[in-house]
Amino acid sequence: LRDTLRSMVTCVMGTVIGAQKQHPLDFSRYLGPFVKFFTQTLSEPFDKDRELIFEKQTVMTVNLLSNVLSCPQYTSLSGSGLVFSATSGIQADPQAENRIRATLKQIFNNGFVSTLLNVAIYRLLLLKPSDIQEWE
Image (tube, rainbow, N blue to C red; front, side, top):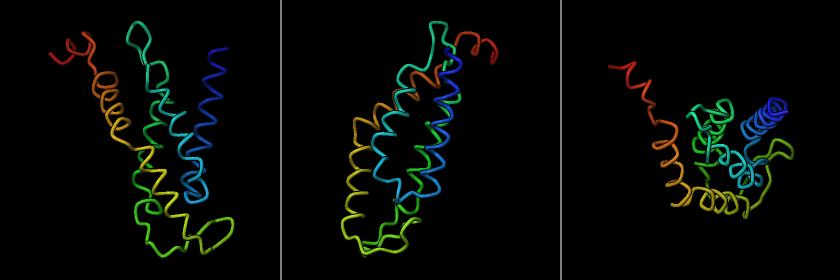
């Protein structure tokens, strides 16, 4: 059952990443909930033996965050009020850019960034004794 659930979560995550990458402006209204869902896999990614439980999901979470942070449609908002959507073409939507900016600001607040750094440093990059022995 656990393997089936992992497989299903991986499939959903792949679909979400694809949708965000292919249609970032249309997808922007779903950014908050999906980033929250994805980052929950980072909150306790190891079992009691310090083995990574959701390795694929962890990589996919980092992939989504990287895509969002480097997405030109999110980072180079022009202020023109014109938004290009794959489903509806160019539209005059002066509020769209404000919504995207507000969503990104809400997601990537100081607490969230601090949590991500703590997870990266203290959970994902933490060396096991066997890792240290291997490098000695």
